[in-house]
Image 1 (tube, protein in one colour):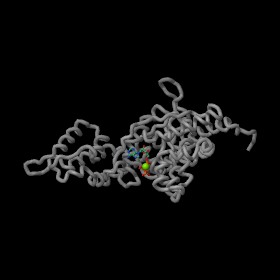
Image 2 (cartoon, protein in one colour):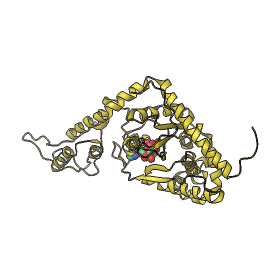
Image 3 (tube, protein in one colour):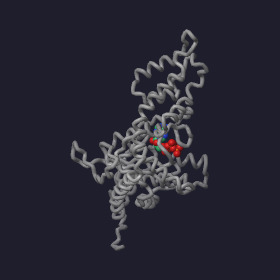
Image 4 (cartoon, rainbow, N blue to C red):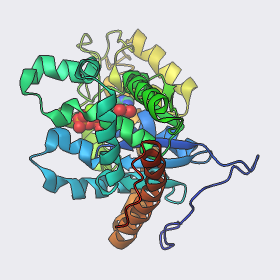
Length: 361
Ligand code: ATP
Ligand code: MG
């Protein structure tokens, strides 16, 4: 483990095969709590792969977290720490990925202000998330910070000159708005900003342990990467399965049964899972009347499978947890690298907008 090395200062990784500069990727998370299996399947695995081929910036989006947690700013520091521990534990390499604290890159806020001139309220209100929240929750009393968050996401992406943004296809509207704003900027002020592209993964949302469509922190239905074996066991044993199946001897449903969804997502042995599914579908009893394939058997398989997945993650996390100084070093270094990049972009933006006055400060 590279625990005691200082985080690298690599500014620009070269693509070894072609010796051309690597393309840049921007991803991120709102630091609102520990990361769970949904994050793992939905984004972390992909990021660990992509870090080998792209210069990666991972934004710890504390400013965005404030848009709906503004009355609890004191939680952010602990959450940033937890999220970065999860990153390191799953194998994100701080030399390849810059972990950047959003609020420490004021260029993002500055860009947001300039972009706000290039987009109308009506356009932002068509963003599905904004639209839904206004309709269902806020009405006209919607905080401006929330209305503007799609524009600030555009600033997040462009501040680092990201070429690619790996997201679920549900994030398409955000990429589209960003491309519109970038197009408009380049049209008014000259080719300056990189026109980013979405790198879409078809999202299959991991359901919650309660059977709800999405595992989510705020729904309290998540298995966290940092859950210990006991917690994991309790959670899996309490999992929702097939509500139609009253007795384990009855034929069971595999489709829409989250235990099987998790096995499909995480179990390496698909042949074994196919066999379990087949037997679960059939049901039936042994000579003593006991179910041939009860929920408990399937859940035990899932517990073993998740422990195999999580054990190395837990071990690495525990190591990193011992060294807070290293952790904040990694965050400082990543933020410095992010800020340096954003500074270059900002200079180009100011010059394109003719804001590069001959003023000496
Ligand atoms: P909150 O409850 O605060 O909204 P959350 O647990 O829903 O938190 P987010 O921070 O909203 O997590 O998720 C960030 C990103 O992580 C999503 O855009 C998605 O890419 C991925 N993700 C989150 N939950 C899941 C899930 N259940 N399945 C697949 N991907 C997920
Ligand atoms: Mg969410």
